[in-house]
Amino acid sequence: MDKAKLKHIAIIMDGNGRWAQCRSHERIWGHIRGSKIVSNIVEEADDLGVQALTLYAFSTENWSRPLGEVTVLFKLLKKFLLKERSRILKNNIQFKVMGDTSKLPEKTKSLIKDLEEESNSNTGLKLTFAFGYGGRDEIVQAANNFIKENPGKELTEELLQSYLLMPHLGDVDLMIRTGGDQRISNFLLWQSAYAELYFTETKWPDFTRVEFRKIVEFVSKRERRFGNVCSSDLQTSKLMAVENKEIITNL
Image 1 (spheres, rainbow, N blue to C red):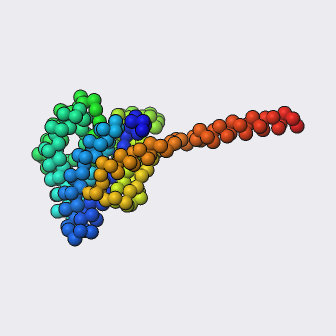
Image 2: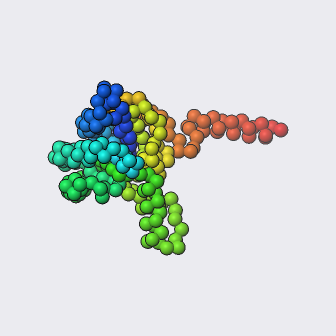
Image 3: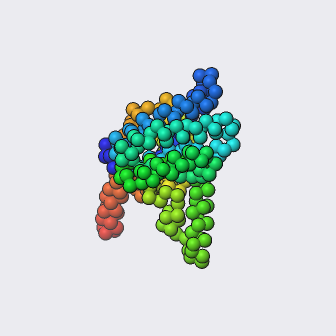
């Protein structure tokens, strides 16, 4: 597999609550189990040579969930930051959080800021957590910020791209959603315009490095056309054009 073919992979880590409920546990147990999967997938992405991995940890819509569940998610983020800090730095990973983190506890916000600063010059995998994030909100904010800074100037795709939260990550090449649902749920809407989509029935707590690698290898074999025609169709078109020219000439 060409390691550089899929540069940016995004994952919607879904199915935690349902995983727990299927085992007669409260939903929070699914989140606790699911949080333990993250490090394995980050390591696998790094081993595969992926340049950027963006994980949907908490959406703008998730604020409507029960307070107890939201509180657990906050605590799990803090635990991840404390536990994985040294490994992130050791493996040359650049860590960022995108989204509205204003409602997080001050200690957690401080941990995020410190790790972002410590890993900022790292040149390896770009690991981004989307927390308090919504794709529509990101686009609206980008457009409004551009208008404020450039009154009267026409907005282009390139300019809007530069005003997104993490423009350096570029477009998403592959978006994976675990848990069985087949939608992208307001995640990286602009960046995923031409992303390959892969939906697996596996719930996030059961998602493994092996399945992740198989998905990446499978999708890497797809021919991505970006609105163009595939190479075989192009060759056929050329042959037909030659034949048509000969027919017209002989008329």
